[in-house]
Image (cartoon, rainbow, N blue to C red; front, side, top):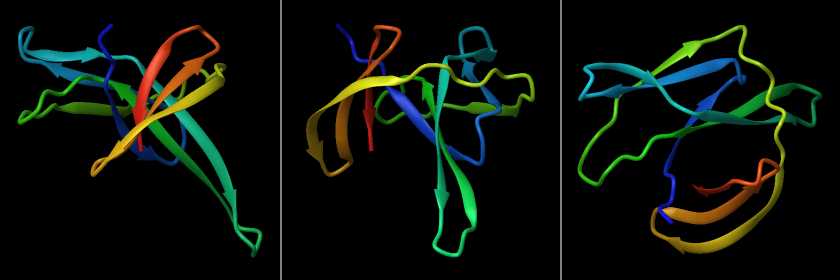
Length: 111
């Protein structure tokens, strides 16, 4: 099984959609993305919404990928949850985890 590679983008909320450049078609094509958000509350009572948008987009080594991130007020709230995750390994680029969603899919994420 080939791993799915993700790009992570920090955003203030989850109302964004993503397209990636397809050099074969010479246009931007919609790709799967999921937001994981957490509300951080500080001691002074101030809260911020901290979201990571994970974009399914494999990028080969020594290459680049163009992403178009657009505000989408009609994007539905995410309904999925993470059932469990496994720590796999760590290297100089971070830690790799296998994440199991309630949709039964296995995804790989690094932090």
